[in-house]
Length: 388
Image 1 (cartoon, rainbow, N blue to C red):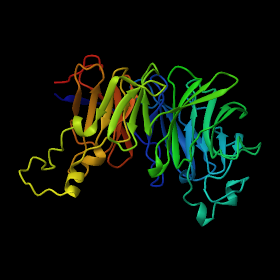
Image 2 (image 1 turned 135 degrees about the horizontal axis):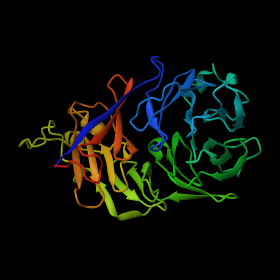
Image 3 (image 1 turned 30 degrees about the vertical axis):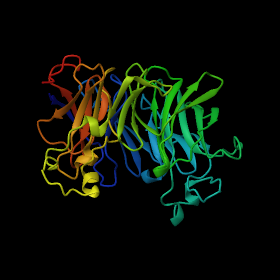
Image 4 (image 1 turned 90 degrees about the vertical axis):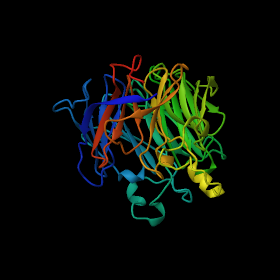
């Protein structure tokens, strides 16, 4: 049984600079943006329901530092961009004016300075490849959640706190809540609850040391943080926000969980047990001389990519482990138990992992990374797709 993909749209990148990062589509249905970052700016292009660019609606945000010196997010209404840098979180409006800034400890691990500006370390060789945090807007755009290296100028939570998780008023920059993230990150990213602006997921990478997953709740007066058990990368939330899609740190296990971290109804898939060997791997050979290293090469693993197409359907991939043998593979996972796991068949080869966009569609980058392809299934929705 296969799932047959249909090209819905191709959206061209707004920036042609070779130094620009890849374009991506963000935001929920009805509020989608095509965003792209270069060293100098972020461009946010509102899209209509057919993924066409709205004429004259592109917004440009001047960047305070190069794109490899941190991460960034654009507000759902494209009115504000927030940059998570090495020494500060800075909110910038389209004119380039700084609306607010929250300074914090330096993300270069050996540095104990509280920098006041990017210029202090811009040319320092030891600050070229710092660790990084991230920021995320709440679904209504009123809150910014920020994962930073402590302490803040106002003081540290405790001497043992390395990373902090903040809730910030998006309009004023006032820090509303602080909590110990209980991690020492190499990087992170946020995933907002799709309906509740007071909940947020934070997926943290600590390199080989692990992948802590945090779930935050802001009640208007206090930030509480749940530390989900295990090393898990958070890849997506269902449209209701009741389900989390996670991949284990070792990339061997895909699971659907609740916001407390419990696996939902035994929805867990081991990569080796679920995915057949790549058809070009030669794994059906009768040779008995395979070494342990050759067996390792034949192993399959889930990519750190994908998400929910609807409340019960996931799109995932095994591109990383397929690369040794040829074309990377994508898969649809039906969590109701009706259809199981089905390979996605495309009308032409795709070259990267998928990104779930909700409403039954997902995206891939063009081979040149200068356009985003939007895919759906034959049939108008995932509820009655062409899986045959």
